[in-house]
Image (tube, one colour):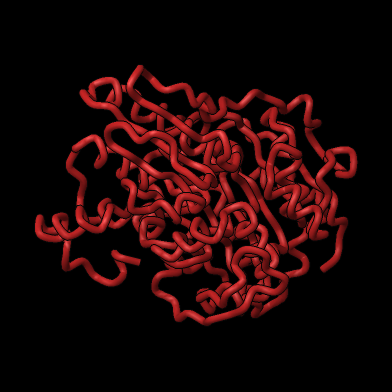
Length: 407
């Protein structure tokens, strides 16, 4: 691979049309010195978008995928657009990207068990789709988004989607921040083309809203790109634990001063992205929150959950105690009890237990269950209840789920 690994190109797309996005991608790649020249005839190229949600706007632009795939195909490459789950196949069913690439789900690919070199979180062997490991040129195509636990998600976190289907749960069990960096060590990205034509802001992934930003960025280095786009969105790179970790492991620069930003200047592209809420103040008396010792990711997750469920907590007639963070003794437990995060494992039978560091958005179902609300069979797999209650739950029809649903 050739080129300056600290360079990031930043361009504007006048509109979200195919022609405007194509022109912006062309400019972004020109500013980088045409990195796709490293692709040779017969090379296998994988483009990894962020495309596992059906909600309009909550995904990488199909127009951006078309622009990148067409250029890789023109080099004589065998091109794949690949993402976990089959949702991308639904979204791209009639998209013109099929003229240049095969659209595949990682869930349909053979898996290979590998050890992540130098891993600090994913230290046990993990199963990864063969296509990820065998491709000659790997391109990330993320969408810039806020995130209720890790603050901002873009190029580096997009690689969590390399793990097929339900196995992304492993990342949260092991510790999501370091797991992000582990995955980037396993499969470095030769090129990242970031879609910030539409960004997601607010309480994502629990909620979130779209915002038109009209930007496209590209780089040969995922860390440099994330640092740059964080600055564009008004987020300090040192706020992001996974960027600090990646920099410490030598994966890229963390200071904007060490990055060669080409094209549109950061200050000219800058906007203030609306972040997820961080206030842990309970919505009313009788809701007791104890999270003084929790890690930042779990605190942010809990703040986002309180915001999401505010109206339901106000309607809930009883008391509730929510506890997160390491502690030798639990505080006074009043009413329904919810335990948040891996640090609560020792006390898991004291109430509804949500494992993970942090838990995933879907695990807010555990809070709703604690309030006496009904949950689906799939949601019931996302939290643990005390042993005695679990037996009663099985009798009510939550038994008999498939192995995939329980993992």
